[in-house]
Each structure stands twice: as C-alpha cells, then as structure tokens.
Image 1 (cartoon, rainbow, N blue to C red):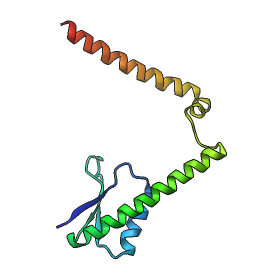
Image 2: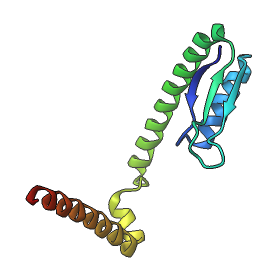
Image 3: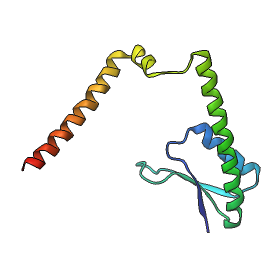
Length: 122
C-alpha cells in the first residue's frame, strides 16, 4: 500500500526536483499527486512500496537536514555581506505598497474588533 512521503504544497520547485532526483537515484518507486484543477487536492510524493518507505524517509530526513544547513549558511553569508533583505529594505523598495498592506491589516483588525464588540454588546 502506498504511503505519503512528502507534501508538496508551498514547496519550492528546486526542492521538489531534488527530492524526486534523490528517490530516483536510490531506485525508490514513487508517484506524485497534483493539487488538481482547482488547487484543493493535496500535492504530494507517495512511495508505492511500503517496504521502501523507511529507506525513503531516512533519505528525506538526511536531505532536509543538509538543505537546512545550506540555507542557514547562505543566510549567514548574506547577512555578513549585508545583502539580506530586511523589512526596512522592503519599505524602501516600495513604500506605498508597504503602507497599503499595513493599512489593510489594521482595517481587518479593526473590523474584527468591531464585530466582536457588537456581538458582546447584544
């Protein structure tokens, strides 16, 4: 029976490709499900053979640990070089859009607060 190995929702394309290559290189039989036409199904990578699942899980865990270390090293390098993006950089790049997003968030908070207060007063 097939078992789900890796959910693909919000996964970068390069990571999904690396996972597919990892499984192929180790001769693990897998298949993929998509999000469907409306994007409501679960995109994932499934291992067909239950006996290969533990091996695939160990490979995936090792891969994700290595990817995490690479990402942290890249972030540290960018921070040392002063090239990491901060909130201030986002504000400087698009101040009007940044302020618009903040106003939208504040409006949503206000509307929720007003709704709750109206329910409490009733």
